[in-house]
Length: 296
Image 1: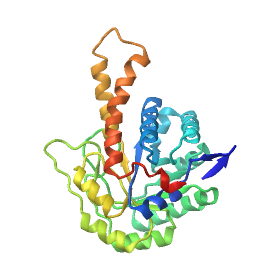
Image 2: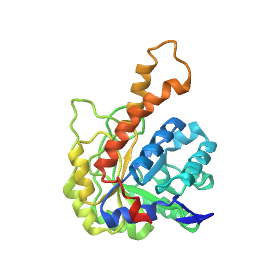
Image 3: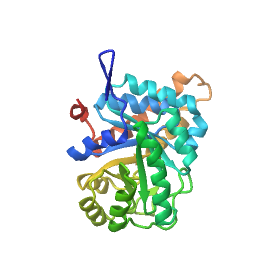
C-alpha cells in the first residue's frame, strides 16, 4: 500500500492482499464486475462491511466494457477505505495479460490448465517474467473446473483434480503468487438435479504441501457448508460471478415489468439492493467482514 497526500492508498496486488488472508485464515471474494452498476454495489457493500475485495474482470468482459472502464475501477480503488485488487480473470492468451498490465490491473491470471503440464509451466513462467517486474501478481491454475450450465464462463465437461505433487512442482518452477486448484467446483449455476461436492481431503493435502494462497474457482453454486469448510482448510480467494449477476438481473426483470419506467435511477437501485444481499452473504461466508484492520 502507498500513501498519497497523507491518505492510505488501498489498491494492492494479489500477493500482498492474500498474504494477510493466508495469515489470518479468511478468504477474499473475487467478484466479476462488468458494469458500473455492479461495481457500485460491490464497492458500497465491501466498504459497509470493511471487507477486502478483488474486482475481477474476464477478458470477454473487458472486451465489452473496454479499457476506459478499468480507469473507473482504479479511481474507485483509490477512493476506497478497504483493500482492493484489480484482477484479470482467466486470461487465456499472453496478449490478454499484456493488455491487462497496460490497463493498470494489479493482478493477472494466466489459465493454462487446458494445456499439457509442461506447456502450462512455460506460458505461466512467461507471464511471471513480465508481470513481477512491474509489481503485478500472477495466478495460475492446475486441473480443470467443470461447467454447471451453458451460460457464462467456459469450463470442462470432465473435472480433473489437482495433484499434490504437480502443485508443488508447478509453484517451484513458475514462482506464481497464488494457485487455483480443482477440487470439484464448476462455473455457472447448478441445475436443481445436480448436487456438487468438493474434494476437501484433496484441499487439505495440497494446503499442507504448499505455502502460497490457494484459490477456488466456480464458487457460486456450491453448498455454503462446503465453502465455509474450504475457507477453514486454507482457501484464501473465491471467485463469484454467476450468483451476483443472477440476483441483479432477476430483479431487473421484475422492475421492468412496469412498462412506464425508463430512468436508470428508478430501475437500478432495487437491482443493486438485491445483488448486495448476495454480496453480504458471501462476505460473511468467507469470513471476510471487518478484516481491513489487519492491513493497517
